[in-house]
Length: 114
Image (cartoon, rainbow, N blue to C red):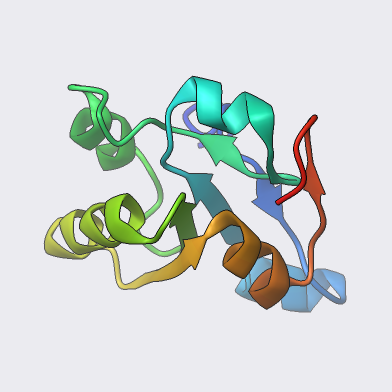
């Protein structure tokens, strides 16, 4: 499973036991160019406009917790709806990059502020 998720960053919160129960995957569904400008630290980029987006996420653990964001919340909302229709139970659209940073209490990184 680790190989399958090699390109997905996992964020563990709290104690080891708590971490195992609260595995969080942060997905930035913007373009690679947008991601390079700024992104939430620890997030991984999977472009919503990538024709293979559905195939990529189909390989993910459906029991993990997914936190998605984009520029405004539109693309991440569409991606969250798609993932839920695929059987993912814990998917949340955090909205924009700055909203995601605030809600997750994780700083952004990159040349532009979020």
